[in-house]
Length: 396
Image (tube, rainbow, N blue to C red; front, top):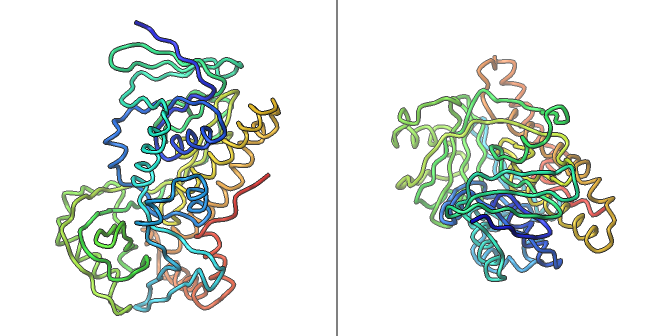
């Protein structure tokens, strides 16, 4: 039998953006309902990003979400850049007095789900047939099916936090939506392995054979990547080939040795940059991957989603407290200013570190010259550290 629900904000998508938005709204006394097409188990086990900017860590701590993060997160004060058989460490703490924390996105999601359910939140998992309606009026709605029943949410606003392939962005009229996109001619083959890392900080490696990255998710779980073709068949990459490629590209110049271990997950991710403008239409507001994608080289995806919902939650708080819409009207412009800075940084990191098919000796030498300048100039190193650890939140 059809059921009707009422809330102030309907949130489509229970990733980091949707869940954190629901949490921030709850702290401000604003009601929400969260819809998610996947199961709770799926979203809590889906391996994604793992680097949190310092500003994000501070926000999670300030809003009561930092207990397990503080206990299990890995605090990093810098990164290693490996090229030309030499290793250079950039010390973020020394350069700008900031740091990053390695803590998996799925762990953030677990913390958020637990906090929202403990607070009595209405989160509907495994929903289907989700559609949004009347976003250009002051009475938008979301329809969906759950456990075989039809439901409608009547609300004041809709937050589209349903990712790149979601239903919210396509709901904006195509003649109003402008898409900016770049597809890179390579992908990342990523693995999760039970092994201890050779270094206590991330290793970015630029090699003639292609890019490699050694990161971690816990003291005994590593997240490693090697550059490959975007349409590569993962069956062509048995364990021995993966470890051999990682060993060759990461090298041993840093005094480390590659510790092999059981590979418990693997997959290939194509690299793309994507921005949709505007990020709002009527009473619909996009956040996170629904509005923008960055290549993971700069570790910006989840951090941008957090920035989006921080801005959106404050705009909604202002509206429900006073009826003032100026922050809501400025939402897209304020978010996009940060998004484009993150796009620039991610594009720069990606272009500097990867092998391009059309890279001749001139192009390769330019990459190496950029890396040599970066690791020899304090001003250049400070710029990377500032962007990597996170630009300040817009408090306007």
